[in-house]
Length: 267
Image 1 (cartoon, one colour):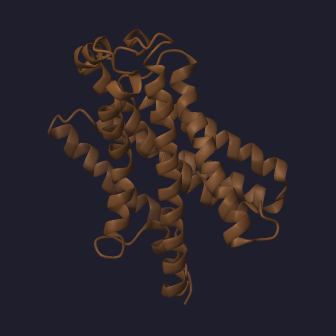
Image 2 (image 1 turned 30 degrees about the vertical axis):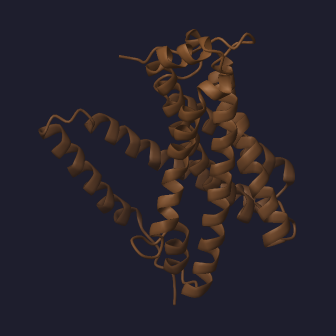
């Protein structure tokens, strides 16, 4: 079984589907046509660029270059977490919470998988390290951004209730506990749904890619199960960390709710 090699023409044909969707969206005045086209162009450029970078990295698999690319991915993911929140924290907190949480979760889970489970030599081989870290960062980024958006919006909407509970003598963590639980749940639901539907409703991306590349289905399934478990662990830990840090930053040292630390949403 051989892998089908795609040509530029094949990709252009696929791109026409996105173009047709953009035209249909424009006709229906949905307001997303421009965003759709910009996202398609960004996808093409970004994936082409990372393909060239990985080609060079595979040819020169030095730990320093792998670490530099990993750090760049983390910093960009941190920016995307902040950008997707309607009411994010002001200043460097808005960027740091997501970035630090992803570093402590996704990086730790990736290194654990490379050293303990895959046991590849060298453990930092970019063929394994970069794709694995990319999948963990992408899913953790989504979970954290959803959870933080839910937490900050709840604090803003329910500020009178939270302040009333504080006035009655409750600690800050008790006053906000319900909203913190809901935020964590919101951040973890996408991965729970993905695991629940895997193999029944959908065939996950890594498994599909390996099968298309000619790998045996059973081996592809093993790798997909591993990836699903790792992604879920990384997303869960990252979401827990981000919500814990974020909920504490909503209050000052005197346990007063400080909503002036949040940005007003863009209108």
